[in-house]
Amino acid sequence: MAAWGREVLHVFDRGFAGEPWLEECRQAGIRFVMRWPKDYHLRDGQYRERSAWKIAQGKRSWGKRALWESHRQQWSQGGVVALPVTHPHVGGQFWLVVSRPGKGRLPWYLLTNEPIETEDDAWSIVFAYARRWRIEMAWRFTKSELGFESPRLWAWEPRIKLLMIASLAFAFLLSLLEVSSQGLRQDLLDQWCHRTGKRHLLAQMPLYRLREALSFLWLVIPPSIPPFQNSG
Image (cartoon, rainbow, N blue to C red; front, top):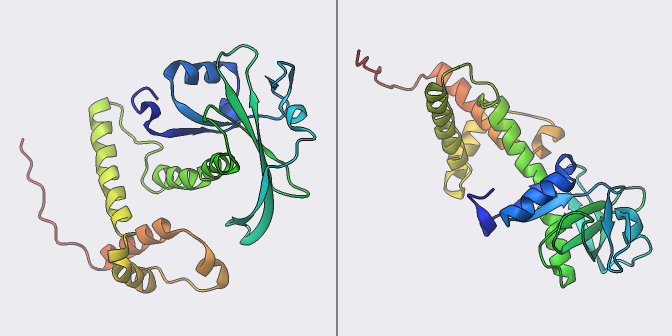
């Protein structure tokens, strides 16, 4: 965290919520958004220690917006409100941003040290946390498809070399997502990883299909790469 400093906004899920990690973030001086469990305690503007849901109870939303839920493929109406809070044992001023997705769905309680002055500021925190799914998808791909999860090497240097090779392959796949590669990308998917049906047409999984398409292509037409010379 110290290496990036305040250049990035760190997003943490509920597993990181609590005094130890919050204190770590404060000492590192980073910008962060942390999903806060509703029963975890904070202090409100009157310095009363209460559960997060009780602090937000009865507070009117600052505003509402139509939100697109990509995993449900539908629009929903959501509200947001932000409240200044402190932690009983960690110094510093924080904001509790509450995202209310609508009837029948649980709200998000997001703790951040970003200054919240307007409704747009509050929505920016909600959208930053919502982007975690994209990050999770990227990590899931690198762990499963590229083998980042369990390289079968004990020595550190060979392991680093293997991960660098996998990173190079990942960079190549990402380059195929550029607008300039749209024709090549579509040809790969149509000819070597063709899918039919509404579910596959709507699903957003281009890296998985691109990797599979390239795999089938190179099985049929192996790339002409000169063999490596053994220096020993």
